[in-house]
Length: 241
Image (cartoon, rainbow, N blue to C red; front, side, top):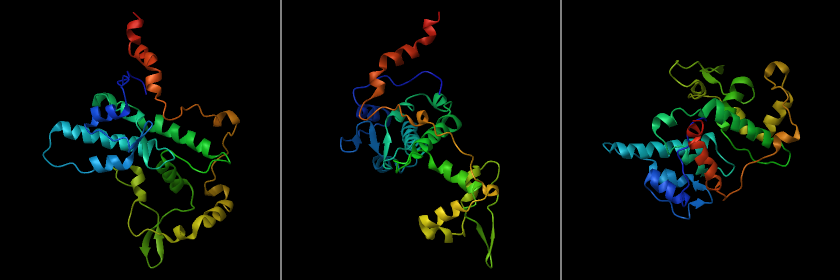
């Protein structure tokens, strides 16, 4: 995501949250550089009518922070968000709207997590799994939900209007659910019986270097460690003159 960074180092993650959201989390809800999702839900779930624009701004940043950290770039905990993503929201809205969250960042993150999950010693997966779920419903017949057409007949989901997200075509009432109660064994058997014409994905590259992770370890704050490089990047245009 190109552009200047708007997140100079601060003394603590709690200070950063308090400055952007005007609510300071306690030490109990923060762990290293992560924050409990329940804390965000308790403090920013309900926006009253008639509030000032500054309050709407805070709630909007909190919502985006939860969406980014708990959906698009979720980790394996399932109940925490990385505070690093909050720093990306410490910028004007015109800058935030220019970030390429979807096809560039989120999809690349999902590919990375799928690559890691393919290792035999890995038991959990993270990332925007809703993308994987929608892809599976579109391309693999196993587990697809169909609309009940009455009298035992079923119909595929209809295409949504142009202004509605395409994935919403899988959100409808009176859907088939019989396959959901069959457990893991059902899906394993059906995957083994897949034919080429039923959406078998092509083989992926499983070379060892693809699984080598270079990410940092909690609770190290790489923003503070590399603040000199961040400052140099912010002033890169001046260095060219």
